[in-house]
Length: 207
Image (cartoon, rainbow, N blue to C red; front, side, top):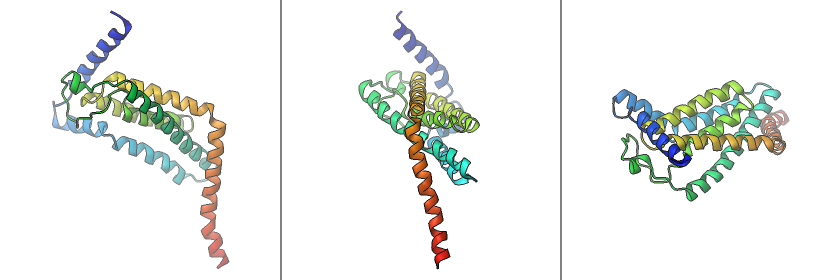
């Protein structure tokens, strides 16, 4: 047995074990559907990063928050471009199509590899770790929850999730390599933020 065949068989075996949780309990199915949703966890992680900017109390915190925001945005953009290329180049049927797996989620028709949702949330999480370690780790756990749930509900294989996470990690490190450029963008955005905040005060003072 070659390496590829071994990985595929292992992927299928792990998928079946996790997917066996589906359709066993209404409560568990609800928890799995919430975690697997394309929008809930991605939206919560995005809002979390935005809240860093809005809750910053001083210049240093704002610098970190804006860096986090720009790095996360860059990681998402880069990973989305690469993910789109992989989706188009390597079409992999969904588990419920190729294995007849149990599914308690809507039937996606695009390529299963890599997981779009997992790539997105891991890109947000890994880029945040570089600036807010504890928060970033919490976001990684939320991303793992999403990945596990998407396997459990039958729309992804474990390798789809793992590949999305590795792609996101590579993009986060790429953003580190171009950090001088991204920090320059962050600095410009922060300056614009200060001008926006000061303008109403100046206008009121002049009146």
